Length: 228
Image (tube, rainbow, N blue to C red; front, side):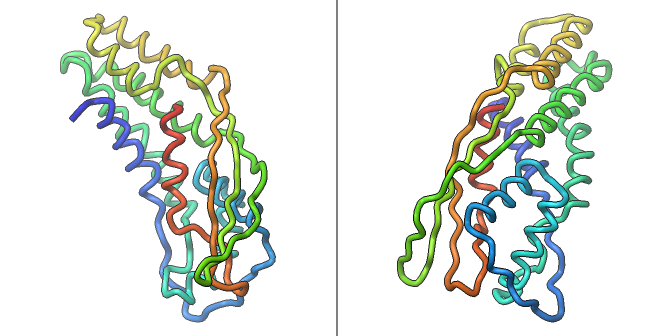
């Protein structure tokens, strides 16, 4: 498998697929359906992109009754499990990045590789996002759908971290040069200029007593990795 694609796949696996779902509660609560689609989309953005604790709690509260009525786990996302995944990500991805280099220098390069992975994750979590509008609600076959536009300000590195690490590994650099190269890539994610990523996030519901939702929210936000 192509190394850059492999690194990207592991990134998504480690950071996006690890959101744990809690067990269903015994009794359903009344759904709070007062939020507008734009407000709901904003909670999803801050949950999936920023992993913001308050937004995760608010989104879980908002979705709980609708999820229980649909026989789904009560909680959409777990902040504690996201924090655990965030702590594990630099360790596991650091091994993968260091593994691109000759075996003799992998141990010495691991700290720099871990820092690179940590900086990439911090760049994603630190993206500044805002909703910019919503199309009028459309209804088809009893399903109401609202498309919410949003944009995020995210770091623009000279070259994506996966490609940059792969190129560095193929350059024939000495251990000290490779370490310096990894640190340079990491620094580009901590201090680089910003770029705008725009997308559309749809939310839907079957009836007005249900919460606006998107059960495949991460599919929209996976594209953010194309810009990192």
